[in-house]
Image (cartoon, rainbow, N blue to C red; front, side, top):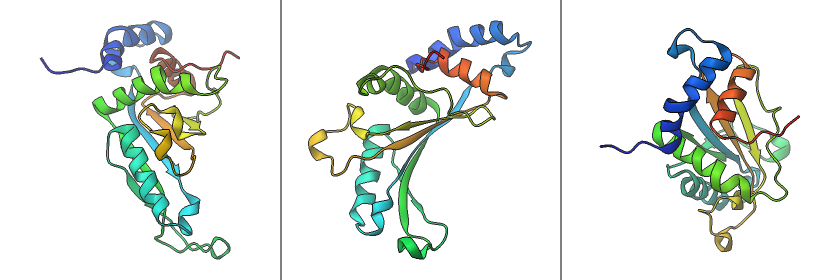
Length: 183
């Protein structure tokens, strides 16, 4: 028997029926699902120090369990001494089982380690059913060794869903365990 992540099994067993009941879908294929999670990190100081990109790539690979790629600048900006094609960030796109494993670790282990945490804001939706969450410190992840951190950086985590509206996406993410603030 092959391994199935906990959240994926929970999605199939509980979340589909809960969302079908809430939004009265006629078909199982109408139920929104999580398509991918994109974890990205901007490293603006990498213009002066090229090693910072390597550290960012290494940290993202440690956090997500998948190799990160560097993002390149699209145009020249003279005020910032930035040239087209210079690496200025890092990102990882997670799909399938690694996506569910990352979401499970984020909800159960990482978010509770945030100082004064009382839920995530619900205003990060883009109008098309996708949600972006900003994390201010990478040291909330238990995979990161605090002694080896060169610089405290934040990152953006984008949840791409197949939901048509933000309300459906919020219900999906709430059912999957994301702790939204009560308004």
